[in-house]
Image (cartoon, rainbow, N blue to C red; front, top):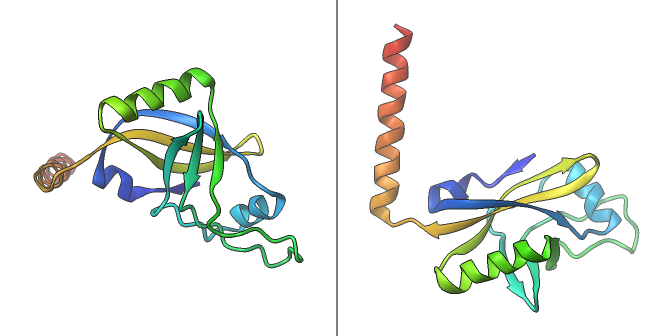
Length: 143
């Protein structure tokens, strides 16, 4: 499982969706090997479909001339009502569709995307203070 830990730091994550990925064979093998970068990826709705852009999947060494392009746009598979819901949220509320996790489920590659609202610097400091306070409480309870 690959997590985008930066997403929860930079965004207030509201609603999450599980989406399938349209991948080629060499991409699936490269995913299983690792080395994937999810931090720069983002999703957008184009033409009634959701596309993932900026995801880096390294080339699979054992693939011959049929190797994939590492940063190509990849289609996400969501239900029609989920796509409509995401599109409405992105247009009205000024939210962003952020990829948070990439994992395999029953042999299929899945991506968790979340609607997120960008945090301000103040919000980030406030979250850090809450984490520190929670750690101190846990330490005190251990003693």
